[in-house]
Length: 220
Image (cartoon, rainbow, N blue to C red; front, side, top):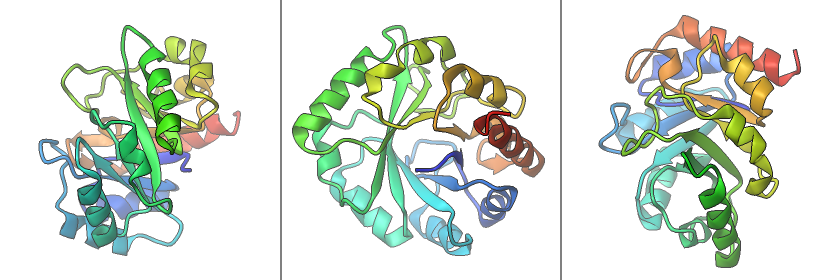
């Protein structure tokens, strides 16, 4: 699973900048209402332009399993992130060769709902490969720049059944180190925190974010 992902990539230049700065994954958003939406054909060109070893993750919101698989195959994705209200059984319908990250918006109830969801996934026949915990932004499905509750996540981490934890939610080059120190995630995910505007990355901020995250993940 990835350690540092730059999400909401919409063009080849930003993808190459992320890879060149040391990101081990990028995210491509296929939710049509997102400000970072990318057409599958454009996404395919982005994936083709990346160096070997950079993981490509597709962000989906309430898509059906057949559509997810079709887009993943067309684009050449390594994995998918489920950011909507997908039922636990959908994960079991996806090919085993496709990594699955389940995103969860941590609100006033903490991780209790996520724990129940993971129990249902186990019953349905397949667990996600990791969970991505984001801030609860109401009707928005991520990418809002709102910070997740680090203390709550750290306190309740045992509720995710030992799965790798990817931390998201309002991270920037200036606070990613503190976030990693507080939560001790296996990885981090950023979109708005390295942008000039939605869907357009700031290459300097990408480099600064990755450098800070690598240092913190290494225990520095």
